[in-house]
Amino acid sequence: MTFLGKGDAPLLPRQASQLQEKLLPGPFIANPLTPAQVEALRHRESAMNEQALARLYLAHMTLDQKLGQLFMVQYYGTTYSADLETMIHDLYAGGVIMYAAQMRTFQQTRSDIQRMQARAWMPLFISADEEGGFVERINNIYGHRPGALETYQTGKVSNAAALGHSIARDLKALGLNTDLAPDVDVPVVNGPDQYLRTWGYTPQSVIDYGGAYLRAVQGDGVIACLKHFPGLGAARTDAHTGLPIIERTRAQIYSTELVPFKHFIQSSQPLDHPGMIMTTDLLMPALDPVWPAELSPTIVTGILRHELGYDGVVITDALYMEGIAKKWSLPEAVVLALAAGNDMILGVRSSYDLRSAVAAIKQALASGQLSLQAIDASVTRIVALKIHYHLWPVPRLA
Image 1 (cartoon, rainbow, N blue to C red):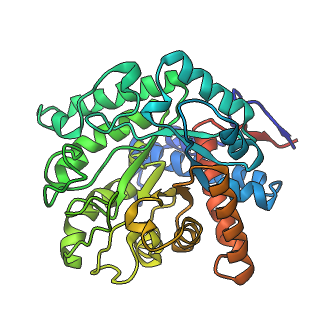
Image 2: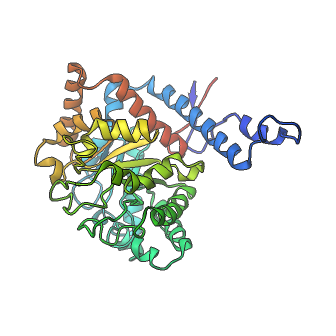
Image 3: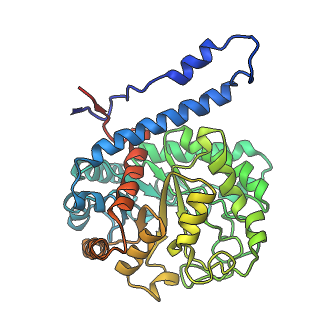
């Protein structure tokens, strides 16, 4: 088995497209597949091949390399640093999240990202929370853009798509490949963390406008991330400063907050399927009276994975936010998040943090709190997503 460079395309079977060509009018027991159904089959077949390729890589990875892939790290300072290099090269981090202070000029940002990818042990997710409005990270370079609510208020879904295309284009030009957006929360109250961040006021408006943004971003080759599962729209507390407690019934949650997530996960359109979904720190007693959502096996594995059927990468919100950090240390929260069913961790800000988190995972593996099978499943999803978006070289079987 040899490994090809990033520019090589996977040689995947084309049975689905060939099937479409062979369909002829006749006495079918079932109707011929529509073009949309054929495309859905092609997408499913491609995903199965990407999973198989990811498992080939997994077979050659050490435990430390696998564990590093579970982390989307951030770093202190305004430019590339030795500590960042330690995380991405020596500790095998799977991705980096960047903020406005670290993206000051076009050339500086592009140079730093190129250096990250050159020094990384394997290709990185390079991400930012770029929503437009007051949650924007590349505004030092490209200026201010409208946010979700402002775009919704234009009354034109096409403007949401235009915003997505604009952001994807500029992220790619800088070297970023992942947009931690769109926010698909449905506003039930005018909460402190969701002001101007939502695509209107109903599940349908979020689906229409947020979906246009999602398809534009992913159609342009940038990974998108739906957030904040299972929904921050009823939060009256800022999750950065405390743990929101959502006192709503199960029926209310299923008919409002979960509706956009369910729609995109179960859509027949491939571009509707988000590469990532971000869980968040809030307590929904109707779903789980004990654990915050991103640490809840009931919510992450039971509802998101099994009930809604999401099979992509699940990433936490930043685990240093006060809703989590007031009760658990970072290593403790990392283990609990992985045990709940998350694949990737946000919230590691130094090589010290990363070493501590990896040590905690190893201890949890030894005690049986975590299983290597679950770790392998997470790394397979992460690597498959990198293959799908052409971040990872594709192996060719000799």
